[in-house]
Structure formats: C-alpha cells, structure tokens
Length: 301
Ligand SMILES: [Fe+2]
Ligand SMILES: [Fe+2]
Image 1 (cartoon, rainbow, N blue to C red):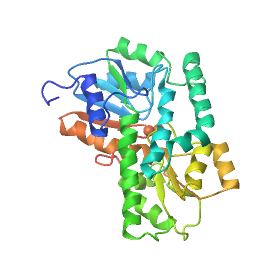
Image 2: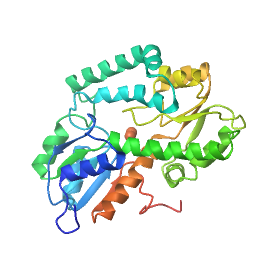
Image 3: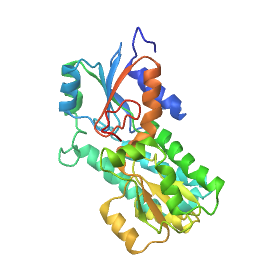
Image 4: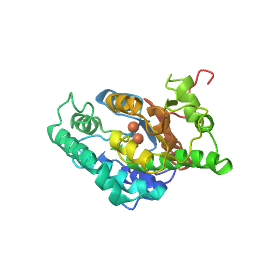
C-alpha cells in the first residue's frame, strides 16, 4: 500500500487486522464492494446511501463504515468473544458460559434472525441497499468493526491499568479523570455533548479491579456485567448499555459501571487505524461520530 498506487479494499481490511493482531477477518467485518487505487477515504461510524452519494460527489474513492453493513449473516457470533474476554482478567470461560451463556446465546440467535429478515426498520443501513448503491456509484465499500474495537479496548484498558498500577486504592473518580486524559473523551463531551459518565458508583469509592468490556460485537448485557462484578472485577467500563439493562443494573448494583459514551469509546480504536491510513498516504475524512483527534474541526474543544 503506497502513496502513488493507492490501496485495495483488501489491503485496508488487512491493515486493520494486522494492527489488532487478528489472523482472520472477523465475521462482523468485510469488503462489500471491492476497489483498487484507493487514495481518498471517508471513515464513518455508519454508512447509508446518502453518505455513499456524498462520497461520490466529493470525489472519494471508498467509504469505510465501522458498524456492520450488508448482511454479514453470522455477525452475531462475534458476541461470543465475551467468553474469551473474561479470561484476560483471569476469570473462567467455563463459568462465563455457565452463568451468562444462556442469555448471550439467545442474543446470538436473535441477531442471526434479524440478519435473515433484513427488515429495514430492524436493521437500518444494514440491508443490501447500501451495497447496491455503492456498486452503482462506483464507490468502494467496506466495514471494519471488531479490529477497531479490539484496538480501542486495549487503549481504554491501558488507561485504567495505568491508574491502578500507580495507586491500587484509586477511586472511581480517578478512573474517570484518567479517561478524560484521552482527547476522544474530551471531544465527545465538548463537541458532541456525549460525556463519559459514572453510571453506577460513588466517585470517592475505591475502584478495585477494572475491566473495559469492549470488542465483542456489542456492549455487555446485564448478565455479563454482573458476571464481572460477582467474580472480583468491581468496576466495569463499557461504551453504552441498553436502557432496560441499565435500569436493572442501577436498581440492584453489585459494583460500579463507567459508560464511555458510544462515540468516544469507539473512537479510541479509530485513532490508531486512521493514523496508520494517513501514514500510508491516504486522505481520510472522519464523519458521523468517528472522532478525528488530529484534524477536527472542533469548536474550541
Ligand atoms: Fe465499535
Ligand atoms: Fe459502535
């Protein structure tokens, strides 16, 4: 991938896989309309037909969306990465399967059914309309999900680990402050009005062990958060939580919960990828919640 000849869609996908240390492309990511000689790219959280038309109009060669696009029938299986993630904290995969497995597997089945249905109201911007539009426009189109999430998970976890390594008695407030050291967190609050928040817990309370539960297709549902709490990880950090889950967790908390907000949390993993693209000579325009910490535009943030 060089400055003069441009990149192929496959090279863009492989670059993300390599940065994240993934041997194969996860099932929530893929090239939907292949392209070559790509020099100018729009990178966005989600893509729709309007964005693809905009890309064409502005002379971009490719659109990279983060969230899954097209059908990707088995994308829901990536949610099973939650079984593996617990082992990074020394917890048992077998216990995870026993305790939150039934809830998780139901979610995997639900997601597959949703993909088979591909009803627009259930899966907006995740039908084949976007793929057909990109092909008709001659715009290359792909989405890169898990690789970027894994990159971001490492960034967020490193931030938490650094605080607790310096001071094992660090408070929840200390962890929140550490997350605001990252530009993505500040920009999400100041530019997008999406602050990182301590959703459950007292800022003056000790954080204890902390896990950034991210990079497994989607944010942890209630049973997964409770698993961490019940197995010695008193602080869980996630991007967001479904409203009903959040209400139940808040009604009967067994630990603390930090929510980064969706844009900041996802963008922790976009920053290294976008920098790698630019280092290879590509022009990248970040849009729609992909926070561009290097370019902006920002209103004084
Ligand atoms: Fe993500
Ligand atoms: Fe996301």
